[in-house]
Image 1 (cartoon, protein in one colour):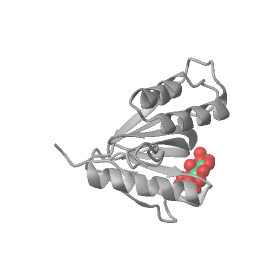
Image 2: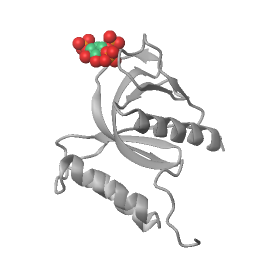
Image 3: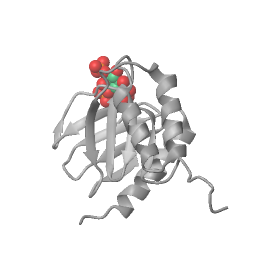
Image 4: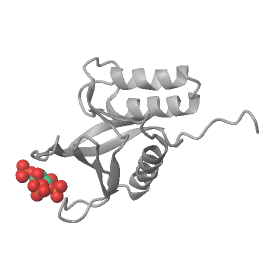
Length: 157
Ligand code: I3S
């Protein structure tokens, strides 16, 4: 009906826990450092926050801002994730880094990029390359679709 809530998997707003590592930064190869991160897709930005031990205040801020913008279901979902992952009350969680997906690309990573399963390679227009991964193929497939949608709908101004 007209009042049914929007899907939490709306293409350009999504959050969850992914494993992430940079592999190049501004075109320079960097050492892999896989970490579990809160990952938020907001508009054309892909934002990563430390997943473990750092508290969730930044993440909960994102969740509440989604709610404030009328994305109640997504906000609730985000809060639930935040509570489950590390409990509330900490105040050290900050965005670790953010990448702009405009002008970027993604593809399934080849075997030489990682021995892990379900790995997506994200290339930004600034030649920073990341790998993102989940053990759960449903989760990673949803991210693949959302990232593809974002890249194809957020054109350069
Ligand atoms: O592509 P690489 O260099 O084989 O990546 C592996 C290494 O980064 C390894 O760390 P050390 O070289 O510091 O021991 C990691 O533990 C592995 O997870 C990396 O490979 P995968 O295939 O998991 O992305």
